[in-house]
Amino acid sequence: MPFTTIDPQAALVLVDLQNGFRHRPAGPNTADEVVARSVELAEAFRARDLPVVLTRFVIAPDGAKARGRTDLSGHFSEIPEAMLALVDDLAGHPGDITITKRGWDSFYGTDLNLLLRGKGVTQVVLAGVATSIGVESTARTAHEHGYNITLATDAMTDLNPQAHEHTTQRIFPMLGETGTAEEVIKLL
Image (cartoon, rainbow, N blue to C red; front, side, top):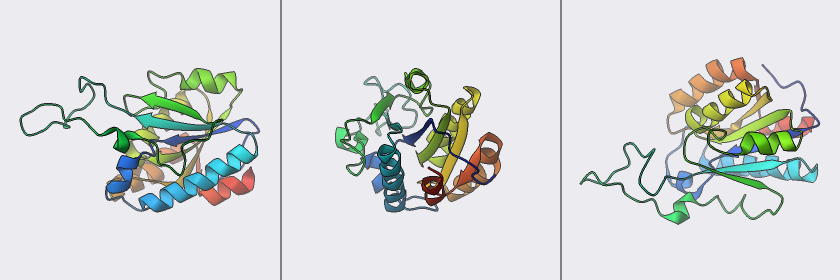
């Protein structure tokens, strides 16, 4: 479903745009394209005093939620903090909200819903990585919480191009409206 409107009380939620994803091969949109479009979205939201939320995925020190992330001896291998940091292009804006999460979904186990409700947010604009994991999980929960959902599909990517295509073509249209970052900015 193409974009029709952006609510006056919208928030931008950028999922897991961390240094580590820049070093992995990506699907239909490159890491640099996703970051550049996300920066444009963030600047547009900030210019209108609308909330910008940056989520950050971390793994518990004991390796919980780290299935498949072990070294050859079966021990949890630590991910360097530099890889978990938000990309420099988006970090460091004092008005932004940073959410640290330990799973795919940006709502589960975090204060995201409380923070958004406290700001009167009625619509969530989503972008980030990975399309079929973090972004889709967050979109599903946002939908369940009753937010209007807008998905800037050119500001997201996935390790698996087929998963990205499936999510953007089959799942997202059931949850909200899809389009480009440029289309979102034009409607703000």
